[in-house]
Length: 397
Image (cartoon, rainbow, N blue to C red; front, side):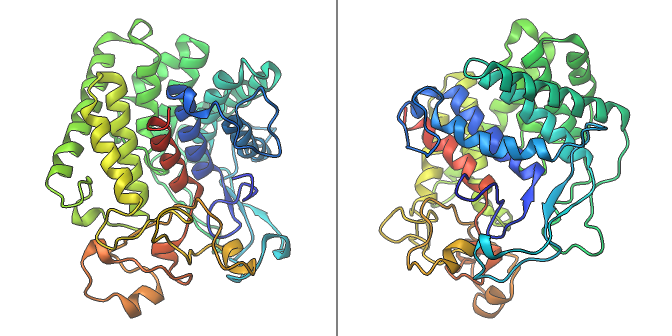
């Protein structure tokens, strides 16, 4: 992400919620599997003391600080130009004006959650930075308390960049409360968790829109002693049951992954890796290594064991994606794409002009084309890469 300067995807927009999801995945990977991050990458920032993964996350966190309104604590939804630049435009040539989109509850909740995480993780490396993160998280939480009913975000009429609309903010508030409780131990946050968890939203999802799984994981990682016992037991049993459902679905699928036909959506590879993350969380809390075996099958799928015999990660595998919808890879006059990018993967909805023309009638898992014009199957994003980092960390300790 340092190379993408916080850019979210194949364009140069910067989005608070998706950015927070990406950082959450990487901080969780560091918390659960620290030995995977001992070796330097190295980065220009490598200093021999702070793990490189945390230096990388800091690039996005430092940008997120700029998205918080200092007067209210609310967080602006995104920072983009009015419309997308051309596909061959390099970042330094995208000189159009940038616009803040309005504050949203989902962005503010995500910000509070990830900053509370960061305060905990960075404490032993940079106490002043950790305090800054916690203060920012607290201010965002106060905004949420003062704005209990905020309509979901929609693009202002003059802006046509990615909307990331989300009409349900209870899951983001739940995550924020759980992380703030884990970091501070304050009962006010625990009470907020106990109230929010009763509301109807997915408790085990790890997508940029459904962040409830992060709240559940945070509450469980905080330990049974700090929890309301019945809630702890029910959340743990629910997480393991959801993981078991994914295992059983994977057994029915020829390539041993948990997607059903209807799950081949825009960004289906994010679902593959998010499901693998949940499987590994279930392994962590239950001790059952069978969940990790299933997660490894999901990684095999991403790296080439799929019906198209393609590695969906640029630069890795003997038949890897070569033409992602990613402006620096298109415009840099270098034949190979930037390595290490996770492509979105098959999308049975055929959501761009190129696939509508070329993929009619294909089975769901074949609705993919390695072409720079196919933004609905072959774009890249930081929050598709981040769960893959988490999963690889488990198997790279």
